[in-house]
Amino acid sequence: MGRGRAHGERGFGRNSKRPTCHGIPWVTVEDPWSLLYFSYDFGRQFTVLDDLVVVGAYSLRPLSVISHDKQDMRISQQINLISAFPRQLRPLIILDSPELSGPAKGLLQILSVMAANSIDPLVVNFRYAGRAAEFSGLARAQGTTVLEVEQRSRVDWTFLADIVASATRHGVNLVQSHTFKANLTAMVIRRRTRWPWVAFAHGYTQDRWRARLYNRADQLLMRKPDHVCAVAESVANILRRAGRRGPISVVPNAIEAAATPPSLDKRCELRRSFGLAPNEFVIACLGRLSREKGIDVLLSAAREFVAEIPETRIVVAGDGPEGDVLRREASQPALAGHVRFLGRITRPQELMGAADLVVLPSRSEGLPNVVLESYEVGTPVLATNVGAVGQIILDGKTGWIIQRNDVTALLAGLRRAAEARTDLPGYGMTGREWVLDRFSIARRMAALDAVYASLLPNSRHTTTAGDSR
Image 1 (cartoon, one colour):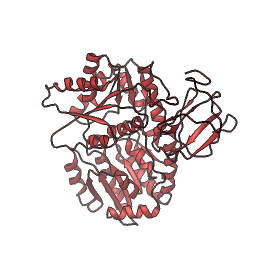
Image 2 (image 1 turned 135 degrees about the horizontal axis):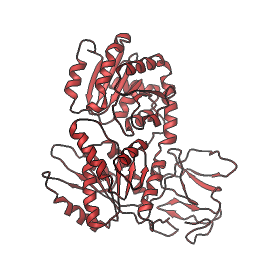
Image 3 (image 1 turned 90 degrees about the vertical axis):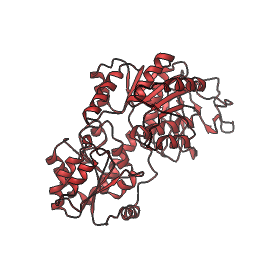
Image 4 (image 1 turned 135 degrees about the vertical axis):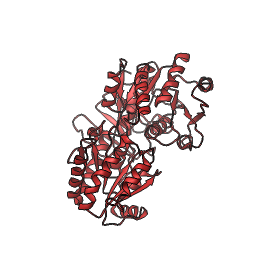
């Protein structure tokens, strides 16, 4: 789209009717620095594509119109504008995650924005006996069409024909995949259909040999997509070292922030709901109970720390293969009464809001959602310097960063946090401001929009007046 007015639209005056898309106003302008921004009651990020101000936000209640010019870079209200996806986009999105995993949470964000932009994707998810289809239920609640498929054995790939047939009926013109099995499925579909393929790389864990084998296979598979979206530059570098030569875009995870973090009264209420006392120093650790999450390192450091600060309570949320081992370790006399395991919880941010500090002792990560979500509720984080953690936490200002797999370093970090105990809410609020500014949904969608546009170069379209879409 070039400069000036586009798509045959005339400028509109005070009394003229503004063009809308599902009731949401939009406008093009001649001077890209003299813009009309439509203010929304959610967030504070905006996106301008070429000379177009694009509107399509989570909170679809326009509050006011404000102005912005080249000389005055201040914005009078918090706003949130999300870029419009290519009009002709009709993606087949493949995921292998019945539960609400990190990739599944991020995909729900994308699906919400697609719904706001009248994009109708077909989502395919794998179904497993004995595992609740949590993601599929939430996606359907948003109005998304979801096809669940089942692989009856490792050599059973008959479901591919069902996916291709359903996608063809749906009018699909692009394939998007998340996680290894989904990537493998997308590669075969790409070969059969020639639909362009974008794959997401969410990061790689250093767990047992089986996980490392799958990681290596996935990294080699990532040579094949037309485009790859990595959640962090560190993940993109892993793929480049594995032989990826095609385009890679960094599309980081994002958070959908509440209007305000929990108040002091709300935090006290959350503490009571977890059986925690107001005077206790509460440390929350959330994640899969597996080796790469480093919870064993936290428990080792806690042995000495709880002796120094006996009112410490460590609350661990999650499940996984190391659960029994970690529970036995936490039952030893030095930690008895100081550590609780909650299992998997459905509202992790309630635990984060009840805590003084969230600890992420991981040995490996991509861009961890748990850190973003902790700052969303205003709770500071102590984390190891893995993956993109250093891009989220400002060491000594919003939290603390330590070396991974180091009991001494983790103990020192806990001591620093305890010394700053009365200042921890300030650390959390500063971190919240930092994260909301750099990891907004608007930024994520703008980056993803550019990827879609590169794969469907002739489909960029902005809704004009009278267009039903």
